[in-house]
Length: 458
Image (tube, rainbow, N blue to C red; front, side):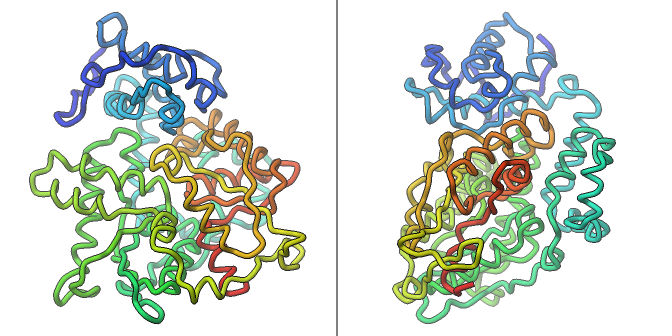
C-alpha cells in the first residue's frame, strides 16, 4: 500500500469506525453533491465506503487516483441525514482527510496552493495586507472588464476561482473597530461572546455589525475579543489537525484574555458564545473532540464547546425582547414599497450544510424571520443539496463547485423569492457569484441583517 500520513492517536481509523451498517442501498446518492455533478459511483458516499473497506482489507492502495475520489467529497454531511442505516460517513471522512495530506497524493501545485490558502485565509491581518492593493480593483468597472475580457482565465482555474469570489471591499473590513465590551440596551438579559470569523469580517463586515446591533437591541451584552483569528473550521474540514488545534487554542486564549478581574470585558462569565457563520459553529461545537488529546486544553475546549450556539439558535431559544419585536416593521421590496399582507416579501432561506446536517438547525432561523411583518418563507426544491462552497472546496475543486453554485443559485431564484437568505459567509459568496448568471438574479442577505433592517426601517 502506498505510504500515507500516520494515523493521529486520537483519530479513529476506518476499521475502528464500523462501516458494516452501509448496505449500499443508494439513498445517499440523490443528496450527494459530488455524485450530482460527477455521476460516478466512486465519487459517492457508498463508493467511498467501499474503497475504505477495500483499503482496510489490503485490496486497494491509497494512491493519487483513489485520493482524488475522496478529495471530490465536499464534506456537506447530507448523506448522514439521508442514510436509513445510520452510517456515520461524517466520522469516516474525518478519519480519512488527514491521510489525504500525504505529499505523494497531490501534485506540487495542489500542495502549494493549499499551503497558501492555509497560511493566508485563517489570518485576517495577513489577508488584509494582501487585499489592501486590491481595494481599487474589487467591485469596480476594472474588475468587471477583467472578467468580461477573459483576462482572469489566464490566472488558472484555482486563482480565477479566488478572484471570482472577491467582493467589493468595505472600509470597515480593514480594521476591527468593535470594543471588547458592548453594553446591552436597556435591561441586560444575557451576556455573550461573539466569534467574528476570519473571512466574514473582511468580505462581509456588515454581518458582524448587524449581529452586534441585534444582540444589544435585545438586551444582550456582547464581548468581542480583539485579535481573533480563524476558529479552525477551515483547516479542520481539510484534515489539517495540528493547525486546527493551534487555531482553536488561539481563539480560546483570545476569550480568556479579556474575561476576568481587571480585564477589558470584566469578570462575569458568558451565558453563551455565539457564531454568525454556520461552518464555524459546527467546528466550535466539536472543540471537546478536537482538543481531547491536549492535557492542558481538553477541559477548556470542552467547556467552551458547551457554550457555543449559532446566533439564530440562541435568539430563538431565549426569544427576542418584547420591545424589539414591537419595533419590527415590514421590509421593502426592490421598488421601495413596503411589504404588505397582500404583497408579502418572499424569502428563500438557504440551509447551509453545516447548519442543517451538521447542527440540525432548520426551524430556528425560519421562525426568527417570520417575526418580521409580512414576510413569506418559500422553500427551494433542493434545499438540502450543497451550494458548492464547502470551506475551500470552491477554490481547490473549482469546476465541480461552479456547477453546484449554478444549480443552487437557479434553485433559489426559481422559487420566485425577492431575497435569498444565507447564514454562512462561504455560501453567501458562492451564491452571489452564481446568482449573476441566473435569468432572475436576487440579492443575498444574512438573517441578522434583515432583522435589523426591519427594526430600523431601513
